[in-house]
Image (spheres, rainbow, N blue to C red):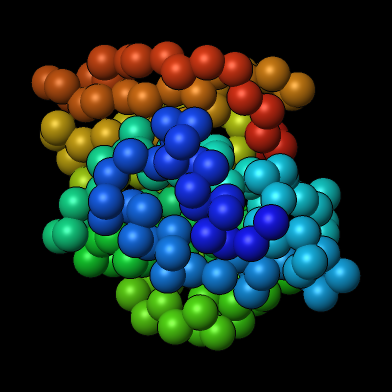
Length: 203
């Protein structure tokens, strides 16, 4: 399966709906964000290992989370869990600025290299503990978390703009619920979008 076939299937299955997001998927080559030995699986709709116990999410999950986030052209987005940089690359085509945090120094370095290779100039990769967010650049229009949390970190809620959206897998190891939070009067109104499995957020 190639990129065209995968995107066609993601549209048919209802994961990809928004024309701007579909275009972003067409612009980013997923193989850039995979280890050499796995590049041939770039257009398989499955999560794949990227080293250090981490994975690159399946394309349908990246599509789903991006659609729930509703990225706007002028948005500043915080991502927790850069991994190899693929989700940040998709967002880079949709928003003004992406700040992404990765705990593993080796992955943070690789994400920077991958994003440069993909021509994404509006993404900053930071190495550190994503559960604390990045208060220096807060508030954020949107926050996306690509690792599992037992609950939504309060620090991230504080750094989200009023009216902003956070998309996050909430739950324990091996089973989470994909959750959308919309900040209203300082608190999150939650919507839940079914089961998912992400690697746990580490501190």
